[in-house]
Image (tube, rainbow, N blue to C red; front, top):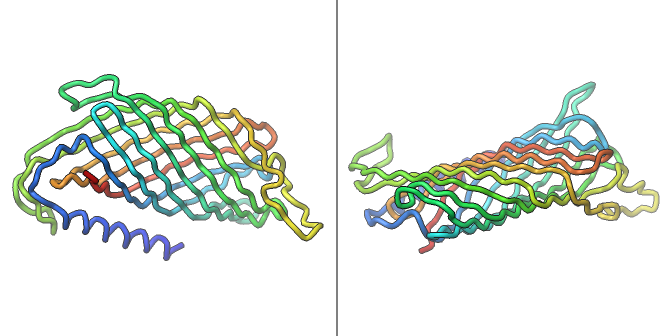
Amino acid sequence: MKSVSFGIVVFCFLLFGQLLAQEKSKQVDFRYGKFFNVAALLDYQGSRDFGVSPLVYRGFHYGGMAELGFEGLRWDISVDGGIGVGESSVAKVATFVSESTVFYYNARFLRKIWEKDEGKLDFRTGLHLGGYSAQRVTPAFLNASLVWESINTLFASAKINWRHSHEQSAGKFLFIRQREGLRHIKLSSQLSLPLLNSVWRPDYAYIDDFSDGDADVFANNKLNFGGLRLQWRSDAYYYFLNGNALRLTYLWDAQRSANTINRLELGHHQMVLGIMIRLN
C-alpha cells in the first residue's frame, strides 16, 4: 500500500510539472471546449454488509481516474472511469480486514437552463448515470469471503457554475514563475438524486460451500431494483493561459440497497486531483 501511495505522489508531481511547462501567453476562451482529464484519487469508504456482519468496515482506497468531457454554450457532457484499491477494517474482539478493488464510472448529460452576467453564473440540469462495482475479500467471512457487487443508478442532476477572471501580473510565487495574462477560476457544485437504482450482488450470505471442489462466485448474484443513493460533488478549477486546468474535486456518495435482510450500505468521501488537458 505504501508503494501505491508513493506512486500516486510521483504521478501528481510529474503531471503538475508538465502542466506548468506548457504555459503560454496566448489567451483562449476557457469556458467552453473539449477536455481530457487524468487524476489521482483518495477515497475514504465505510461499508456494512448485513448479509454477513453488522459491523462497519472503514478504510482508504487509492487509485486514478480518466475523463473525457465537453462543455458548450448549452450542453455539459462527460464520461469518466477509474479504479481504486485498498483495505477496510474494524476492531472489536479482533481486527478484521477486508481488501477490495473498486471500479468507478459515470456519464453526465446536463443542459443549461439559466445564466447571469454573460455566463459568469449559470445553472444546468439533466441526467447522470453513476456506477460502482467492487470485488471484496474478507477472510473472516470464510466461505462468504469473496463477493462481487455492482450498484448502478440513474440520477436527476442539478449543477451550478460560478466563474471569475482577474489580471495576473508577471512575477514569482514560491518557485513558480507566473506569466502576465488573464487568469480564470471556476467553482461548481452538483447534486444528484436517484430516479432508478439497481444492485447486483449475492442474495444470501453463503456464496458456495466448496463441497464440489468448484466455486462460481456469480452463481447466487441477483439483480434487484430499489434502495437509495445520493451524490453531491464540488469542483474547483484553475485555468492556465493555454487553456489547460488544474481541478480539485470532493465527492460524497451514499448508497443503500433495498434488501432488509441482506442490505448493503456504503458511504464514500472522495478527493480527486488532476489536470484537464484542452483538446481544441
